[in-house]
Image 1 (tube, rainbow, N blue to C red):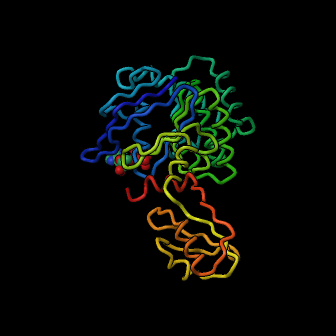
Image 2: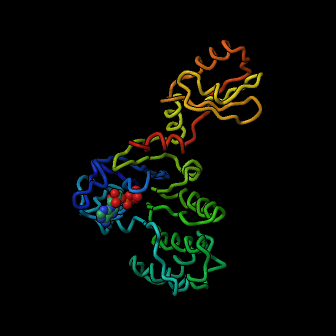
Image 3: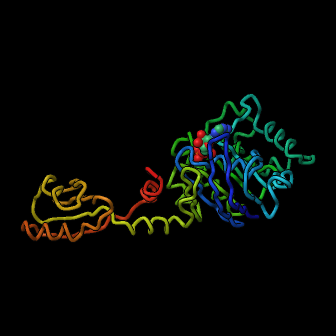
Length: 305
Ligand code: ADP
C-alpha cells in the first residue's frame, strides 16, 4: 500500500501553501515529513487523507485517486491530525466503538476494539474516561482510534507534540511497532524521532521539497559544506587571537586548550588554522571536522531560504 504524489500544488486564496511537490511513500516504509511551521506539512497530509479536495496535481493511495475514489481511499487510511480532538467525557471503549461505527465496521465491534487496545497498550486504562487519562495515554487512544479499521496507511501529524520525554519515547516505540506492517507518513519536529524510526526523510520548506533521502545521506550532504573544527593546541591561546584567523567566524573554548572553531560561509579553514599555528609557534595536537547533526542539516536546508 503506497502513497504517490505528483505535482501537487495547493492555494488557500492567494496563498500558495504547497508548491508543485512530488514524492512517494513505498509500501511498508516509515517516512518522516519535516519542515518549519507553515511549510505545508499538514496541508499535504490533509490532501492525502481526503480532508482537502481542492488542489492541483495527482495524489494516489495504493493506486486509487484521493478525489475520485475518496471513500475507498479513506477505508485504507488512518489519520491522526495535529491536536487530535478526543471526547473527554467518553469512556475509552465507548469512544473506540463510536469510531468503529463511524468507519462503517460491522458488528460485533468487540474483536476489533480488543485488538487495538492490546496493540496500543491500553489494557489497564480501557474502562476509564478519556478525560481521566494522561496526555500520553490519550494519544494512545488517538492511535487506537485510527487503527480500529485496520488501515494499511497511517498519516500521523505531530503525534508526540505536547508529550513529556517518557511519553514521547513510548509513543515513538508504539509507532515503530505498528509500522512493521503499515505504510506511515509521520510529521514531527523531533529529529531523534526521525532518526530512530524513519527509513527516509522528506524535508519541506515554504511549500517546496528541499530533501528526500535517508537521514544519513542528508547529513552526509550537509557535511560536504565545511563545518566547525575541533582543534587542540599544546599551548594556551585566546579566543580573540583565534577569531582573527582568516575566514573564522568565532572560536569557543570547550576544555583546556581545546577549541571549537566555526568558519565563515562554510569555508574550509583547516589550512588557515594550521598556517596560523605554525606562524605563531602553536603546536596543533589534533584537528577534527565536527559531523553535522540532522538538526543542523535541517537548519542549513530551511533557514533563511
Ligand atoms: P505546516 O503543517 O507545515 O505547519 P500548513 O500546511 O499548516 O503548514 O500551512 C502551510 C501554509 O498554508 C501556511 O502559510 C499557513 O498559514 C497556510 N494555511 C494553512 N491552512 C490554511 C487555511 N485553512 N487558510 C489559509 N491559509 C492556510
